[in-house]
Length: 380
Ligand SMILES: [Zn+2]
Image 1: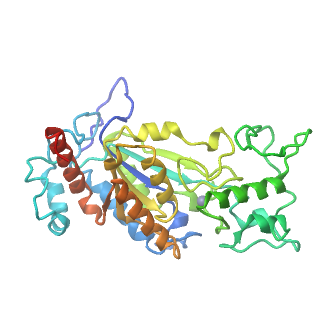
Image 2: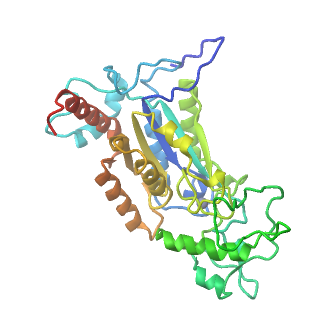
Image 3: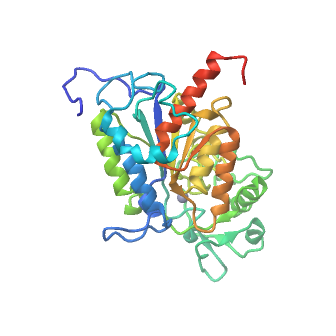
């Protein structure tokens, strides 16, 4: 039941406390086709199952959470879920509850409510440094998807940025020389930007960073195309959540700069300007949550680096992170990176939740052990 009674004023979406669902890049281009829709251009084979689970998780909270402007459903409250949600989650609970004692036996359960939803959206131009159409060889051929372009290959003339590329006029901060500092200036006196020199320097910095070399991806998430849209099953659930709660989904675009990649929603791989620097506002906003459920695509790339950037900058709050393992998949061929990410998060103190049905049970457990630690400060 939604609370849609008229009001004469509105207040800000609750940002303090509660459970936030962070859906990273749950967009059509990362999903296999269904219902007559063709495969996304960078479809991850299991992403459609992830999408169904994400949608089910969101919808499972609608039957019991109150719509409207209540403030009292955060994890620090003692109200439990209603019967409908209990029965929805019964089988998963039976499978997953710790036989040593559930949160219920500890005397409390949090509300099955998602207070905020933040949905990041990979957002590219057609001409992008990680798309083949940006590059040419001496015969004017473009590199195929999944080609790796190394700095030395650009220096040697194997691959070059296309010669007719024009950067948007008047954007002095496209590459800000105060942020992307080079020995030799990249701008001539007349303002012409030395794109070749930039490309050599950019790829060198990527390689020195040791994370990724420049990979040419299939063109994906082009702004304005169907592939950029949120996967319809997820979007339908988002709309229902929004209508039910009177809250807005917070969409965060990433990847619009054509000269740097952006796996993490918080910062570009190489920072070029104010707009590609670490997004402190987003981090500060997210860290106000009591818990952050993380899911989306791809586990090996954008989920991975978004979550790492968050947990690395939230010392002492690592327990807030719950990675929904069955709501995220790796790009084929990058499973090791996905596994390494899960290990990293677990070692940092995050919870890896293998079954989304038990996400709230995991939060119950963390909440209870947090309370116990508070009551017994001398015990570790
Ligand atoms: Zn992308």
